[in-house]
Each structure stands twice: as C-alpha cells, then as structure tokens.
Image (tube, rainbow, N blue to C red; front, top):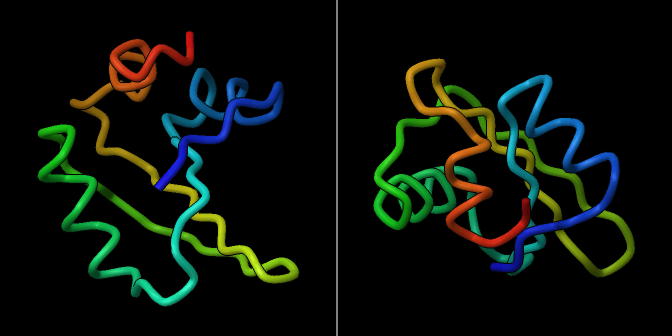
Amino acid sequence: MKPIVTEKAVMMIESQNVLAFKIDKNKTKKEIKKEIEEMFKVKIEDVRSLIRGNKKYVYVKLKKEFPAIDVATKLGLI
C-alpha cells in the first residue's frame, strides 16, 4: 500500500477528509478498511475503489473526528 501524493490527492485531504492509496489489486474493501484503521488508529466512513489498467486505487474517507491531514502529516505527505 502506497499513499498517492498528487496535487489532486492533497486537495482531497484538505477539502474532503479523504486519503488516496495505490494498493494490491486483490484486496477487498473490508480488508483495506481494517488494515488502514489498525495502521493509523482512525475510523473510516467510506472506501471507494478504482481499477485503472493493472492498478487499484482506493479513496478512504475518514470520519469527522479523525482529520486526514493528521494522518498525511504522519506519513510525510504534507
């Protein structure tokens, strides 16, 4: 699992409380949700996924009480 650091991804962190990751294509949304919640000690509201080519991208919306910008700072994205 790799965080995505593009201008659009950073704007999503700030405006929508959403983190973007490039992940293994075989993982399910439930597995992704569990892994991210345990790894960053946050609660997730929604997981959206996109398969483009041979890669899978997920957009993880965190609950309001867990700012995505804090997680992004821990990861060194911002």
